[in-house]
Image 1 (cartoon, rainbow, N blue to C red):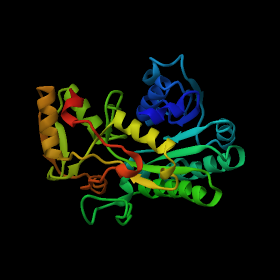
Image 2: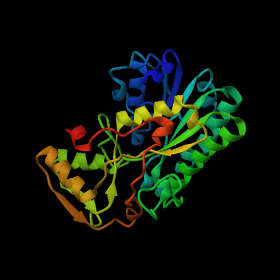
Image 3: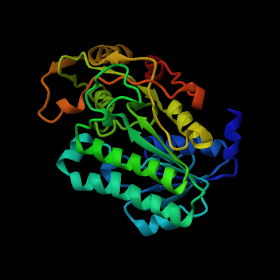
Image 4: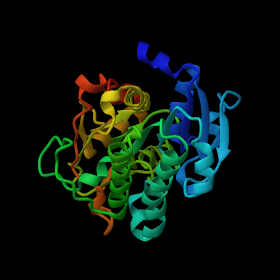
Length: 314
């Protein structure tokens, strides 16, 4: 896209930069000739890994800092043109087991980052990675941005607070910010060690280890997926398009599939494996909801989730 030329020689800061989406975004920005700084705490459970940038390690700057450190963030945001604020605690179960940590990362730290921008770099443009989990159980499908918001876990509440802090600072202090509500991002570099980022990761891990995929409930829950390069495109478009300022967008796909059919599709792609239908775990049922959302309106951001799931899993 021609507009992406705006990133040439631009200074770009990515929190969570050594993670799955952050490193994919960094790789694209390097191709666009941006000056990229990656911030990551490298907390073992959160997905940051130097291997994710092995091919661009000499073309980016890495700062090992925690977004909860207000002094570090006050320094790091200075002189940056864009901030892709991707760092966060993403596990719904972890948020219920350790709500204070989730609050500190997904809400309190976001306020500190915005204060750092207000005081030290009010001209920066911020794109915040939110989550579609904030909607809770849908009242209608597809879920659009006007759908009632009823989070079902601590993570959803704190991500919503972080999102609204960004919109508040856009509206009150004119610090340009917008939020994208993400879900089920997949592609090269995705975490397969566990289900902290998406359940799809643990499914792939089970197939690789010769274990059956566990499908909770009846398997008829519907999901849609975004290929990581499409998510990167959406982040970049949101950053450069002024019509996105102060707005929130669902990042959804035009394709959807129920979990039972998805498990069968993965087995077909891998040419081996099995799946089994199992009862919900006590804390899992609230996390496995039928949610399909619409894409970012093309009239605003000209984005479309173009990838076909089965092709990109091969």
